[in-house]
Image (cartoon, rainbow, N blue to C red; front, side):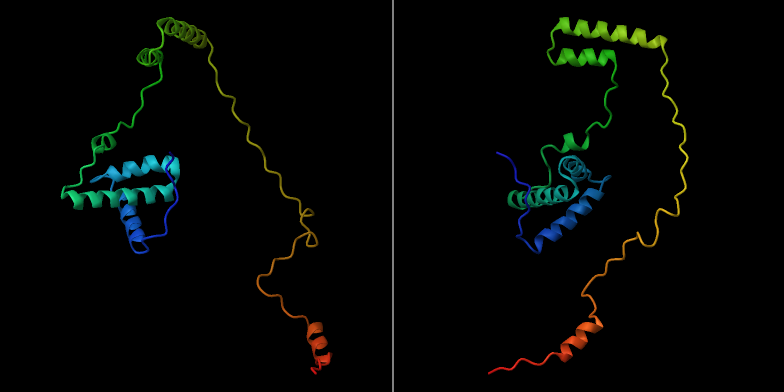
Length: 180
């Protein structure tokens, strides 16, 4: 069962109010960063607009439960969301081997990875690879003959085209239709 991403048209007064509240809540990064962190994770997957609507809905559901149960705002995942670790582990041989061991990879495969990585590290230490520098490319001046006035497209006009003088004179010379 997949969750829908469509936004209903109901709540003409409530929806804009909740969107404004959600926008204010994601700006509060120091005092109450819960909705800000939730917004960041949603924005990566869904984009800004849908993330804002999702935060507004989360706030509305939280308000409903606070009123119904007569309790303060205390989400279950508050500590996980607020105290999440931003830094990732450095990618080196010991961390890779530790990761493989934690995820149940057999010891023979771990030894193979360890020997291959250590051999590649020893071979790579002797040779120093440097990136070749890009040479600056000179810009060529535009030739004046390339864009002549005859080749340029006329500017597009918006709206109704003006009546030409021929159509005015033709309409006055035509006799009116006789109705019987």
